[in-house]
Amino acid sequence: ARDLTMAPKKKAPKTVPNQDAELRALKQENERLRAEMSAMREAGQDGAASQKRKREDGLKWCSPGQDSLGLNDQLSTHELERYARHMSLPGFGIEGQAKLKNASVLIVGVGGLGSPAALYLAAAGVGSITLCDGDTVEVTNLQRQIIHAENRVGVAKAQSGFWSCKALNPCVNVKVELRGFTKDNAFDLLQNQTVVLDCTDNVPTRYMLSDACVALTIPLVSAAAVGLEGQLTVYNLREDTPCYRCVWPKPPATGDCTNCARGGVLGPVPGVMGILQALEAVKVIAGLGETYAGRMLIFDACSAARPFTVMKLRERDTDKCTACRPFGSAYSDVTRFDYEKFTAGTCAVEPKSKLQEFINKEHSGGPHKSSYVGTDCGIPMDTKAKPPCAGDSDQLYRMDTSVFSTYQKKTVIDVRPRHLSQTAMLEGALQIPLSEMEERFAEIKGHTKKNDKEWVIVCVCSRGNDSQLAASWLRSKGLRTTDLIGGMAKWKKDCDPTFPRLV
Image (tube, rainbow, N blue to C red; front, side, top):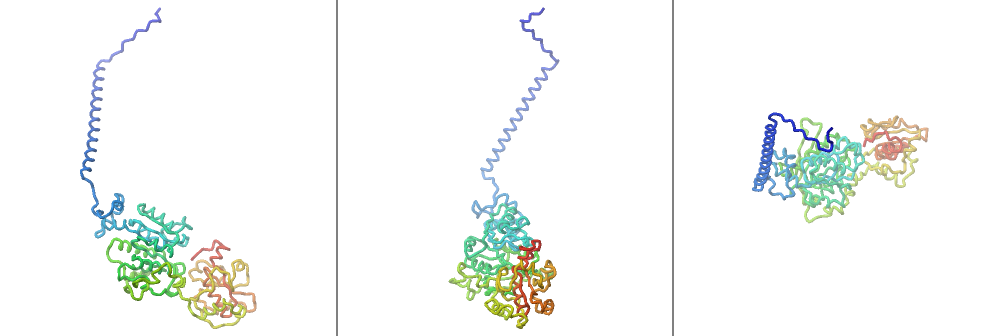
């Protein structure tokens, strides 16, 4: 038996021939690899240190075109790459791009003109852009105002424009003014601006903006686009360059003044003009080529032979222009001048026509409406007359939507322009635009019922303005006539939300 208290004897390990030699060889190889890795690390550190020493010794890249700029104003590596195609242009180069970065641009109106202008100026690298608009995005804007989107309907236009510009170019500083351009903020907005873009379709604002730019000596790039036509010029660039008031000392007549809502517009037309505004702004900022200062560019979208025409404008009139003459004037004091009164609010002076006199008399305590029935006063139609009250106001001779929808004894006449009534109108209504009423009076008279004293003609339009003129004129011709308060816009709101909003 074996003594269990004694530790067992260890067995001698088995040996394999040449094993010791192999182990020694592996150890030597491992040491060699360790030495190589250490040498490589040391070499890398020495290389980095060498590169650092070289940079410290002055071997750095530089941008000579930015030598005149402050440290905070210089273009970064990312910006140099982003605007490389600009800087490749002879006569523009890095100097031109640096001028764009250090420029400030105010865009008044972020609609059909302001949309492409803002996007292109943001993409071009203008350092600071202020978007000024007091309106909100509507679905009818989207056919031409490309800076906005379907999911932004109801959002402030300036805010929508901010999002689009920042998404396009995060390097640009974009500011917003949601109140629009007013007397209260005019000079605050214009302070330190390099150039201003007039992208409005509002005549009082055009005069106010121009006068303020004259007072502060700021170039104004102005454009307009309606229908299939557009125009562009640069005001106030040089001492001899006219301002808006030099060219238009009096507000345009009603017949010469319209906007996209009333006259319609083909989407790309304001796009063309807005892009040209951005181009002129870049030229003014960078001192590139010739601008349209002292000249007006006229665009005709339907002309293939000559879509662009240039006409010379009068020079600045420091004797007669109340904004440009020296020593200041009431017109240069933007905060006190009454622009609404000057332009009559809708760029028109109240016309003195027989229909206007009839309207004024009818709504100022004149004879009761029943006294006109059957009596033709021989008054010609005046499509430029001023309606007696706001389109959505409840006043004499008018019918609200609740009565209109239930009253059966009526003939409805749609007096809107034909392109609107062709798009959507009430079933059974007569399609007789305001401009055609006089020549089609016999047709209108044929739809009345002389023997039925309850039968009435109801004129409808878009918002209740033209319908008042039509109804007043038909009353002057002896027909029992009323009109729909607020027009088809009010009908859509109160009765049928599926009716399309076309203006």
